[in-house]
Image (cartoon, rainbow, N blue to C red; front, side, top):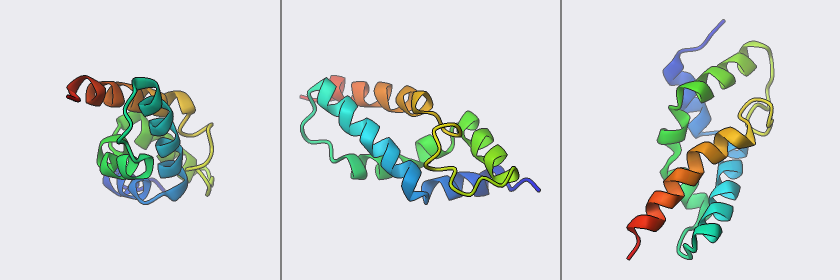
Length: 100
């Protein structure tokens, strides 16, 4: 049975595996952009409601939950690395552009 979209987004914000994958991407992208003050774990947490409410992410996670995939946050077949990069890269680039 499908959960509420809002509940699925909430579950995503509290998934340590997914948050850590986003933090790893944020670290790489911040380094590439020359940002030295980004703390990856804090960045991922600070932006958690932004990435957790991406409609394609919600659909992917809900599908995983509906099919019994319990460890969906660590599975790159659910939320792909490309999906994470597509969120993180422009956000980090925007921060770099706004930096003094």
